[in-house]
Image 1 (cartoon, helix red, strand yellow):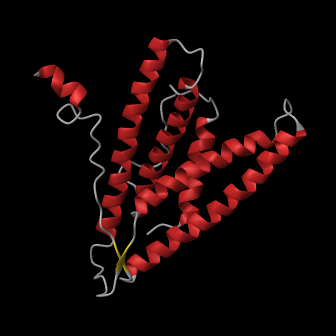
Image 2 (cartoon, rainbow, N blue to C red):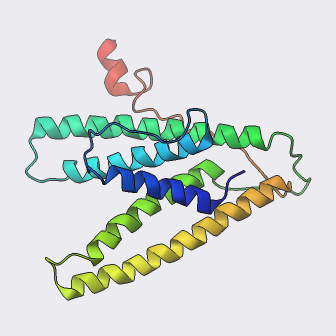
Amino acid sequence: MISSAECYLIFEKSVSDYHLLNDVDKPINNPFQDGDKKNLLYLKNWIDTVQWHLEDIVRDPLIDPVKGMAVKRRIDQSNQHRTDVVEKLDDLFISHFADVMPLPQAKQNSETPAWLLDRMSILVLKIWHMQEQTVRTDVSSEHVQRCKLKLDVLLEQRRDMGQCFDELMEEIASGKKRIKVYRQMKMYNDESLNPVFYQKKS
């Protein structure tokens, strides 16, 4: 269906595109057609990238509390959007493998293909920002060396996670593993499930 190498390229393009302006309010300009899985992958990483920088902003100890609360609520909305996109990706995987009959001994993976892609997308962000640390000129050589060592670990993790994704795709396609999706059912944004909301109405 799609390889880890293709996914990484899309995630890296999104991160690179964002950092042209490095602005959390910059609107997305998705280069892939609506309805294409590549469109969803680019969107997924764009959400992650914006949220990464929102998380940096909200951790400023001198941030105005009103602004900080607004950013925190924006992060909550972003988390919900991220989850929605991951679940749309899983819908695509389920549809793609709909005709595959799992073998009697087929095993179930602890995470779905799309939630593995979620981790891969965030890993691409970690690599980008750790790489950034290795070329700073305003820090000690010890700082740079520590970051280079961390970057090596992240790059190894990138290879391992890519291999895990490709193997999972092969195993699902051959019936050795089955896809089973549990929706996240996040409660904090649901006015009927979050007591802070529904207790005020009673």
